[in-house]
Length: 462
Image (cartoon, rainbow, N blue to C red; front, side, top):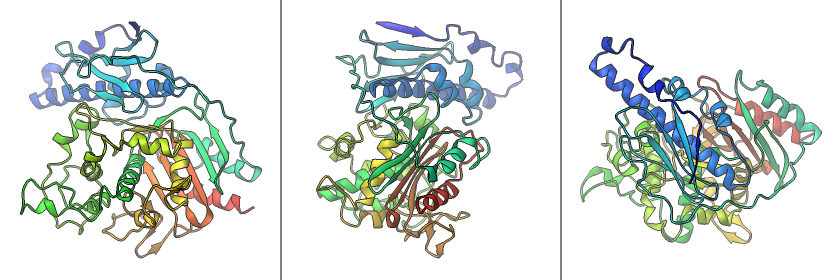
């Protein structure tokens, strides 16, 4: 077994707060320890996923690159903690990543992210849990053969928009890694920051919610699901949560309580807790279908409602049909898909996802999604978010709200997948256009995807 130890000292574990620890309250000490555990999980998971998925795609990422992009400018207080935490990348004899371990406390097991395989990616162990929950896979993971493909050079009309996307003109300190435009079924322009290319995957963050809506749509087309059916959140007959449908969950309208706006799911994402523990048991506070509240738990509930279909039809089957060969939906340590955020993919694969919607669910002569599914996911017919010009459909954001479209220069039928740190997929059916922007934007910065979309659409008219 080959090991790469990239931070060999545990000094950081004992020196962080030694001078002030006696002045901390019990709650402050507890919070600090919990945050360190989360930071270690965050670091282990990103190191494992970014490096192993890139290598599986035939390209590469270094630990230094992951620190520079994925682990810089993240949420406080984890952003300070992740920098000096000792970590170890453990590899199989064939050189592929087996796991990444991060030290965080002298009296605890390291946080560990285990690379299961190329279809399920990396999973994180629980806090205080040993790093061998999945054990070592029986066979070393095999890398895919790299497919070298030329980069589509942007036509002259698009170049100014592309330049501005990388210069910060669409958002001060926004950090663009990739832009791609697909027009009339072809990628007509794409550009990558140094160190990234067409095979370099990034975490989708909440773009995964739109992928989840697509996975649900595929199940509906097969006859395995109905969005009007209960999401099975009630424990027994007569419980009001049983009234929550898959449609309610996709529209962020389940009516369930969440403890923070946006439903921070740190225990699941970075703590190693499972979906079954954290996402499904929140109580009802509004009648389902009456109030919008953006919540990771709602998307997770919609996916969990069709989990019984995944043995025969895992998400990887859908990705393969669409040629999204560089896309991986990852799981928790109990095997459930964290498809509210934890998927890794490339700009080209996301462009194919958008193309599926331009095709009204058809791909290579096969109906993948029900007829009209694009209209369904882009229809802001349910309760809507407050304080924004954006509308919300079923797993996708819309440029129009029920009262109209406030985005000048963008057609009413445009809709988008949006994710943390600047992940965007914009679909414009009336113009036959898909626009992808990937980034690693710092906390507190935002890329103006509406302005970029407007400029791209105007350029394509020239």
